Length: 177
Image 1 (spheres, rainbow, N blue to C red):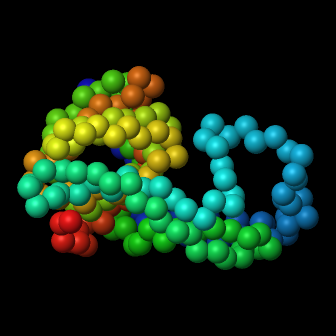
Image 2: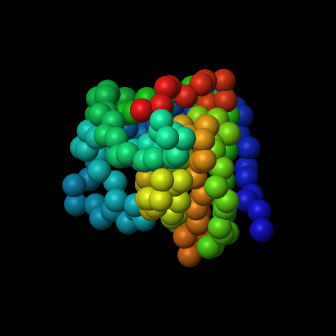
């Protein structure tokens, strides 16, 4: 089995956003937040949470991959009359939407470059070379910086895995912890 990917060039959707922004501005009266509306999102959405939890995978001084939970604090902004919380994820060299089959086992490997996985659906267990196995679910963000050493492997969940992969090929990972 293999992982199927859909490649998207950064900036390619800029013209779509340029078309939608004027439409969104015109629709301000119809898109106000309705407190009595029921949220049926598959992943709970919290508009007021100023913190994003990130599973950070890195190579330690022992050459093994380790993970730590980091908390990234949001920046507040206003856009089209709405108060938003935003997180800066940098400028990736490439963006891929990746799907993986249910229960697929992938072998240990160091990350090919610094990358961020935003899990859109399904789940995955990351098997780190230090023996720990964090599990990530839809809505999770994983920062892979274990570009040297023994690396990580893992298994996709029983429903498979869909993630947006932000690839930072031109940037080196910061020094190990």
